[in-house]
Length: 177
Image (cartoon, rainbow, N blue to C red; front, side):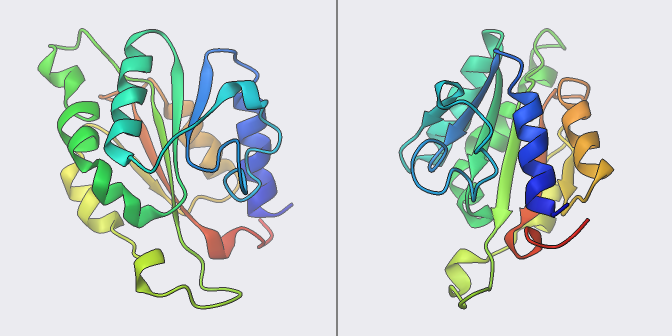
């Protein structure tokens, strides 16, 4: 089984819960997150504009209303544009609310691939170390294979913030696990 197939299987299984909503660009149109959402019904996906802060903010609102949002960033470097909502709201709201609110949100961010052609620095930037230091209550899982990816899904709702960030690597997608 490839890393992509394992992620696809995990997303398909997670989507069996009708409260799960995948949101981002290319969740319904285009590549459907490089094929990893092919097993997810389009009715559980929301195609979003390129507005990363809005995507995370919308996920927070949905989580507060009982949904289990999965925010899909096709490029890891686009996380920079969602940092206000990620750092100041998603990560801190449970703490700021005295534990009254938890946000069961999964953020998937993919570091762009270098194959079949070199895409340039703008599409393969990897800010995991910087983000790691800014997230106080939200764990970040990096380049997970096999059972490790399942651990990230099981952590949703159980962390201090309730949220989880997973950093995937596109160059790993076709590798065997």
